[in-house]
Structures are given as C-alpha cells and as structure tokens.
Length: 282
Ligand code: ATR
Image 1 (cartoon, helix red, strand yellow):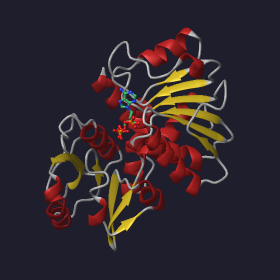
Image 2 (cartoon, protein in one colour):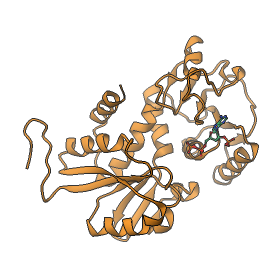
Image 3 (cartoon, protein in one colour):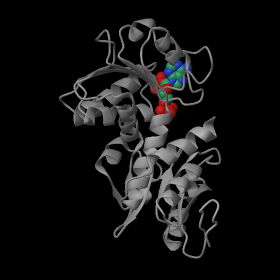
Image 4 (cartoon, helix red, strand yellow):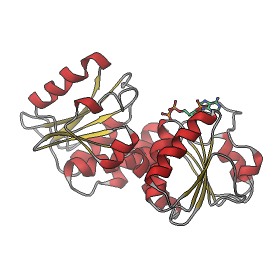
C-alpha cells in the first residue's frame, strides 16, 4: 500500500530495520533512516526497540525470527551487544564498540560507524585528515571511535587532553598498538593545531567551554561532537577568532549514512537525510 502524497509504503512485504538502546525514544535515527530507506525506493520502516541488558539475547533471536534487515545500537549497549554477534568488523573489535549490525549468511555482523562518520563529515569542512596535527578533548567512548578513525585516515599527531589521565593513557596505549606511525601524546605538544576537537559533554550547558585558551590559538578547524546546542561556547570562541567550526550534526548524519550503506549496499541519499535531520532539530 503506497500513500501517493508521502510516497510511504507499508504492507506485508515491508522490511524492518531498527535501533536498540535505553532510552531510545529520543533518537533521530527512526526518522532519518526511514526517510533514507524510502527515498531509495525500499519498502521499509526503521523502528525504535527499547530494551534492557538482560533481554539482548532474546531480542536478537526475535530479530532473526522477523527477518530484521539491520539495526543500530546506542547507549548503553554498544559493548554489551558484542557477545551476541557472530562476526565483528576489525575496527569495531579494536574499539570494543558496535553501533551498526547487519545480517549476513553466517549470522549478525557488527560494525562501528561513529568514528568513520565523523571523518566523513570533515569533508563538509573541506578538511582532509592526512598528515594533520590534532588535539582531542576527552577519552571516553566517542573519543575512542573518533580517534581510531582519524588515525586510520592518516593524521600525523594526536594529543589527547582529558580530565582523568588514566583514561587518556589507556586510549593512547590502544591507539599506539594499532597505529605505531602516529605521534600520540596525553599532553599538549603543539601550538596551532590543524584540528581541535571536543568529544566531552562539556559544552552542552551554556557557559561551559572545555578548551583552554592555548588550544584555540592558531587552530585551523574547531569541531564539537555536540549538536544540541548547535553552537557550543567552544565553537563561539573559535568563531570570535575567525576560526572555521563544525558541530556534531555531520557526525550524526554520516554515522547513519554509513550504516544505511552497509545494510543496503547502495549510496545513501545524503541530502534528504540531512534535510530531515536539520528540520527535526530546528
Ligand atoms: P561518550 O560515550 O559520550 O564519549 P563517556 O565514555 O562517558 O561518554 O566519556 C565522556 C568523556 O568526557 C570522558 O573523557 C570524560 O572525562 P573522564 O575520562 O575524566 O571521565 C569527559 N568529561 C565528562 N564530563 C567532564 C567534565 N565535566 N569535565 C571534563 N571532562 C569531562
């Protein structure tokens, strides 16, 4: 059954995709992904599936039963999901984090598109990470994914600046093991970074800026993975110095774009996905 006005089709052949998390009702993915799937002409819906850690195994069995075509994983299950999967992509394995799962002939396969989504989003700022000097604030789950993808993209230097030294040191150890050619430090070793990046939640509240002044000096691009507020204090301070900025919207968009491309093996309709995301946020 196709609605002529919206072109939305839902019938007995409708394919099902989804997202699991706790909570998951706030997620933008159902809207963005259903729009993307239907724009590709795929008769599909993408639904939120709130769940609990104890129910993950049963939920995966149910997903197999209903022939679910793929799903995203959000907090707090990005690590918890791993034991229930049959195969893990190497980057997701190294990170111990999965945000995208696709059915294969051998069962469920997990991927991580968060970091790659951030790197793909940098294209919008005409920023090629290869050979660049980067300072990153934070050493949590998002930082790990983004740092791994930046190293994979060939950055020259990464200075991880974090409140808890033990966390930045364990991230440094993980990255050094996989990327021995990248200079990785847990203190500021440079002035005038090509990219200064915030991955902490500091900045969600107006008036909070995670970056000490010296990190902003001479920066080429300043990014914040926060998208709400759209302009954090760190981005405002960068703009006052005429430094180009980017918020977390491109990362949110492209982690979804990459997931859709894994599931459908087609090029995602980025423009319509971006439009629906922006409309919804504004
Ligand atoms: P996420 O998955 O969103 O990355 P996370 O794994 O909890 O969340 O990581 C949050 C990061 O933000 C951590 O690096 C944390 O610093 P600590 O390692 O010291 O915990 C950082 N962070 C959170 N709140 C902070 C604050 N008020 N000041 C400085 N850093 C903060």
